[in-house]
Length: 264
Image 1 (tube, rainbow, N blue to C red):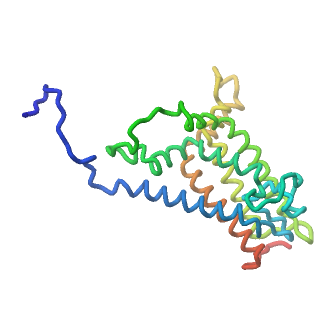
Image 2: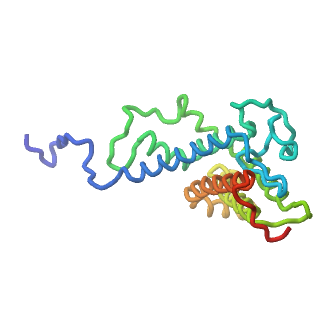
């Protein structure tokens, strides 16, 4: 059959798509990055060791707040209220909330939808699923809870900030070392990621009819909008900063390295 411009018929193409470039490279890198971080984080939260440096009050964010009865008393700012069990992380109260905050994040949804679920993996590449019902049914309906997990993440980021502040203590009083730089840097990046969250941006500027009548909220909304444009970058950078902070504290705690001290 000859196909004309007005026939309405479509050309029969046996191939799934006509892309010849390496469209799969981006999704593949995303899958490798996400799974590598999840593997490291899973190992660390269930390792239940080398999470605290008592001399300098260094506590890895993977164990903050440390609320298990297995936690060292000096590392437990909020008490030890959970039973000590190999399958129960020391920070079991915070980790599930942070996990859900990240998993329901608008950027991370895009990342694992297009890479892990292939929905779709790239422009012009067919969806990996036969049907799609949107985020209206179980389990994807839970994605709509992101706004609530934002408040939990906000509280935990405040706790991480306090951890970084009290880490300036040393046996001789005020102290300052490389670990402090890493902890503070990680907290700053976490604030950039959290404050740039889409839900945070809505909290700052949503439901306002006139920005001129709300100058403070307008300023906060402006800052959040600036960070929101870079939300993807901070999403990945904070994964790296969390792993780096944890690995450094683990290395110092295990005695593999000594903390580089500038003051005390």
